[in-house]
Amino acid sequence: MTSLPRTHRFTVGFDLDLTLVDSKPGIRAAYESLVATTGTPIDIDLVCGRLGPPLEHELLNWFPAEKVDWAADIYRTAYPKLGIVPSPAMPGAREAIAAVQELGGRAIVVTAKYPVNARLHLDHLGLAPDVLIGDLWAEDKALALREHGASVYVGDHVGDVRGARTAGALSVAVATGPCDVEELRAAGADVLLADLTAFPAWLRGYRAETDPAASRA
Image 1: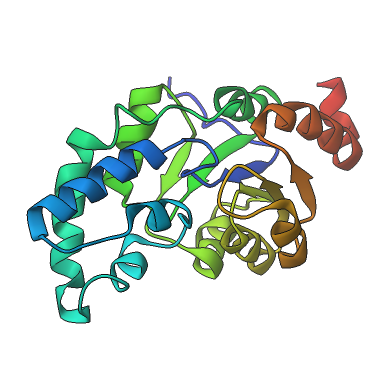
Image 2: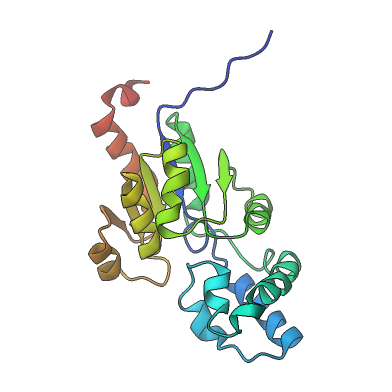
């Protein structure tokens, strides 16, 4: 007998870099390798201080446009070896995903990161969202959020706030990335949390308000 697919009461989306995963050490290592391989000087401290946009956007600051794809390929080839192991889960990441699933929801990751490398991070850290979608940034994240019916999107960057708002989802912002609380608030974040450790309690309260039946399930 074929089992019926699991039904979900709601869907919550999460960003990856500096929301679920502290990928800064791995990104730094991959950029150091890129500099060594290409001989192109890159201010890696500057790069690591403004993480969020897609790799190609950042590389345009350091390489001619016609060499960006070449440099991105070098970076992405080095990343699995150099970028995964040094990058820990952000505080509260496992608990945040688990909170969604324990309440009958579906947790999805929508990230600008190359999806192969995003999957390596999740598998290495034992993070188990229901769906992973990569290669989407800022407003384009709304494509996946709408497709999967996400009512909440959690991220650390003003681009994540814009993606949530474009999708008509509640924007929950965590101040664990390059954007501070004031920037996130000015971008239109609906909820501001210091980090993901506060997310499970917030989610339980939010679900009790928006779906009272969930608290009796």
